[in-house]
Image 1 (cartoon, rainbow, N blue to C red):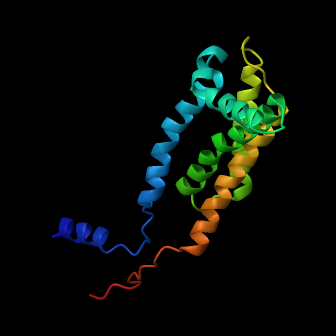
Image 2: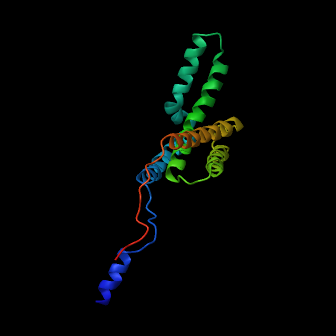
Image 3: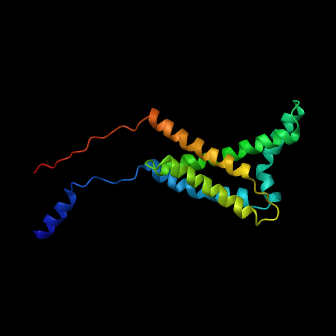
Length: 168
């Protein structure tokens, strides 16, 4: 009889559920392949990474051939935009994974990840770390964070009503 009462009291607990939303679990899982892909892109030797990032040069060449903009200028702009795009998923995933996180914490994580990448690149002979990459990557993190916050603000999750009391 005592065991039944203990089991019943566990089921009738009045503690709120701290269940993690499915989207948060999905975002946390997706952070792993994103981090692996990011590491490969930024830390592989330049010759190997150029197979992935060569699209930036192709866009820059196309723009320079079809406009009065020089290849050096268009490449610099496209590389900056590519660095922004590279970190937008980080901002999206961090905010989706931890919805109550402070935006400044997310930005700090994006900045820290970018600064760490650039610091490690100083040790790689074929890579060239730049401050503009840190700036672009942090902007990308901010855009991702802002996109999720604006989406959630426009499309709030439906609230479920939970019983606050248990009647015997």
